[in-house]
Amino acid sequence: MKKIITMLLALCMMASTVACSSGDNESSSVSDSNSSEAQTSSTTVEKQDVGGLQLPLTDETEELTVWCVYNNNAVPDPNDLKGVQELERRTNVHINWIPVTTSEASEKQGILFSSGDLPDIMYAASFTYPGGLAKGVEDGVIADMDPLIREYMPNYMAILNSNEVARRQATSDEDKLMAAYVMVGTDTTIESEGTWNGLAYRKDLFDPMGLELPETVSEWHDVLLKAKENGMPAPFSPGTNGGSNLSLAYGVTTNATDNYLQLDGDTVVASVLQDGFGQYLEEMRSWFSEGLIDPNFTSGGPMVTRDYSGVENDSTLLYDGWYAFACGNTTYTMGQTTNPDLYFQAITNPVLKPGDQPVQCSQRIIAKDPIYITTACEKPELAAQWLDYWWSDEGTYLSWYGIEGETYELDEEGTPEFTELVTNNPDGLAPSDVLYQYTFNSGSWFGKHDVEQGWKMANIINNSEDNIQLDSTAIFSAPETNLWLTSSLAFTDAEGVELTSLQTAVNTLIEEYMVNYINGNDSTSFDDFRETLSSYGMDRIVEIYQAAYDRYLAR
Image (cartoon, rainbow, N blue to C red):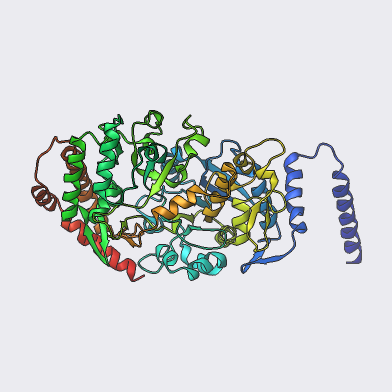
């Protein structure tokens, strides 16, 4: 036995000597070198607790595969981002990324599911699993995320426990956490970003007219008539279906994305069946006959077509569906227009009578896009922990601001502020170009969607403490009454099948009638139209949505 032990010790010493000498061997492979660096890097990371999550996540470097929607042409491979490299150093998890652009995501997702060759984690943005997350679990594609989230994602759970709306939106009717959702908020809060689009007018064209800013729909009519008399060919640009936020003065939404449904307290109603819908159409028909509406409105305005020729030609005064980020002179500073005096001013929705309270119908989404682990993942607990880091404050700052001490510093209140590397780059790089080299969320949204970072970037770009984009969002968000019916509803299989068969025909009927009635090509009375709409199943659609909304409130 002693001889055997002696021989084994000798062999160990020889192996150790060989291993040491091989470190100087110039023929060592690059992959071996990288693997060695990755494994030894974990020893440089001090053990730390991040909201209940222990870093590094593993002593030995582990690997996961992540499929994600990612749009960063400057850095096509996320592993080349300095922030992602720092993420790997902190977690000791290397990610094999499978990035796809938004334009190709839907097609490539279909191919992926057909092949059965699944990644460990999927973030498909708005391109969710066909049939919904529950169907994905039933099909054996999506892992049961509920126990994983509750046990291994303390930072994400802390968010759900801190915000009732976020919790309800991220939970199924069966009280299951089907996925981890991208959460909207500021640097330090979880909250909706507010109403980010609405009505806006060309202030640079309006002010020289010497008129009072309109409060009512009829006052806007008079202003647009004056603009027409002054040679403006298309004073008002509504939505492609003829709807606009002006309809909210009549108490109804005309937004197709709302499926022409809205809330009256906790009751779901069809806006298109209300008297106000017909009154709005009658007003727009009159405006169109007077030449106050862009005759090509069905083609879409600049926010849809990205064609700013009408803006350049000063042909339109009032726009519907204008985004907060495009207010002020942003279209000029971003190079979309050439007139430095051009200025878009957001307005609160008009009313019918002076003194009336304006209303809005705008989404309040906090839990946005789902991220889930697939059944192909051999280490789902590790995957859940890795995901959880993205919802921590530390992970949020890394993914939106970059690396502390390089691209940002924490101020006295502990919130991140960009350094001069971003704000006044020594190489002359634009702030966004600097962040493209650092932050993953410059090309995607993972974990928390920090809208405050965008506000700070706007200040830097505009070289001003004032933030017209943030101010515009506040104006759009001003009405206290919101008619919006949440989009976080879940339908049973039977309800889903029935809605599919009903809504396509109903929505087509509505939009065709709206357009043709406004432009004078259809003289069918609104009462007759409502009867036809009911025969197409509009009342049944309302019943289904009401049942789903009741379940949502009970979550």
